[in-house]
Length: 119
Image (cartoon, rainbow, N blue to C red):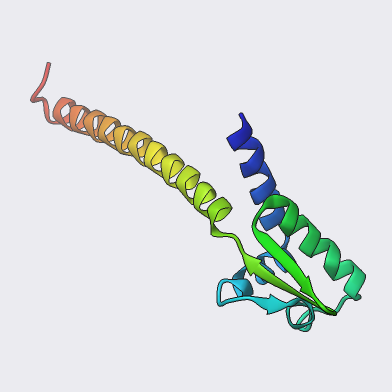
C-alpha cells in the first residue's frame, strides 16, 4: 500500500505543467531555484510552492548554500512510476491482444456461415 501512496504523490506532483517543466529541466542537471523559476511568470513564493510539492513527492531534492538553493532530480520515484506504467501497459496489451483474437475468431465464424461452409 505504501508503494501506491508514493505513486499517488509522484503522479500528483507531475499533474501540474509547471512541475513537469521543472522535472524536465532538472533532467539535464542541477539548477538554482532562480534559474528554474525564470521561464515562469509567477512570484517566487508561488514558484516555491511547486518546488515544495516536488520535494514532498521525492522527485526533487534541494540544498541551500549561502543564499542559493540548488535543486536536483531524484530518479527513484520516476523509476517506480515507470515500472508501474510498464506493468499496466503489459496488462492492457495482453487484454487487447486477446480481444483482437476473439473478434477475429467471430469474424471468421461469420464468414464461414455466410459462405455456407459451416452448418
